[in-house]
Image (cartoon, rainbow, N blue to C red; front, top):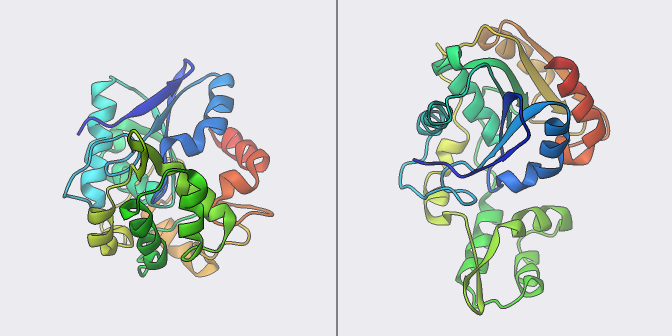
Length: 253
């Protein structure tokens, strides 16, 4: 599995994993800021997302193995790993399985617990978009509006559009597999997985993905972890309060 990435800058490697239905481009602005601060930033597309290959197999063990393969292929050392949402689950799994590769871990608005599937409307809407004969982003937005009324979420999702034929738009996502394996997305980190190096959990103040009841679970799996709450932000913390997010990450790394 040769993952696609965009590499920015020079210095200690800082790898960033996007969330479900996202792609590496979602992190380009922050990626440039981290690169300017002296890091070699790797913005990575996970399997079945962005420009990375598609596969029928989709679970966190395989996603973590993809990341190890990427690190080995690029001969990276002392990696700082940042993961948002699904990317955070991948990052936690990779850190537990391959701790020698990861120097520090940043997990953005996700806990190592089980989450029930809750993307059904979005996946249904994206399927309609992908199957339709669409010739403009405006048309795609009109179709998706029937399923996803929030404009900001639609704009995020429609970044996946590309010209799959000369006059027809499609989505880069492997929707069939992502829909079929939706239960895998919410799975908890295995009970015996842990990572004993410095870890920062970042929570959006308006998000309920991490709650006060999760504190013990975070400490169980990540004994050297701390939690930072970003004000005026929901689940997309890095986009909703980019300045504060950047400051907190830089302070930690």
